[in-house]
Image 1: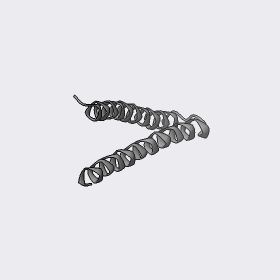
Image 2 (image 1 turned 60 degrees about the horizontal axis):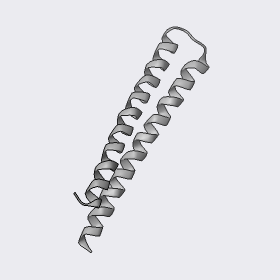
Image 3 (image 1 turned 60 degrees about the vertical axis):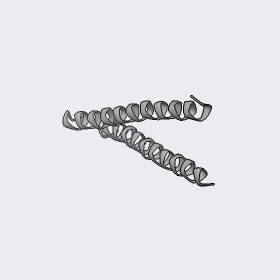
Length: 80
């Protein structure tokens, strides 16, 4: 395997692991917010859980944008 293929595989594995972690954090944040709201905890408990889930969703969107730009950049550099 050449250097570029190895680098692409490492980036893909890291991106997939990061994506799985962020999906898990978003799920736990929404679940925590739901349980805090359902059990009658004060507002800041489920507000903090929703903020955590929202940050995880922003990371997921950022990862998707990054993957799109990397794919587009590698596709464009192949034409040159």
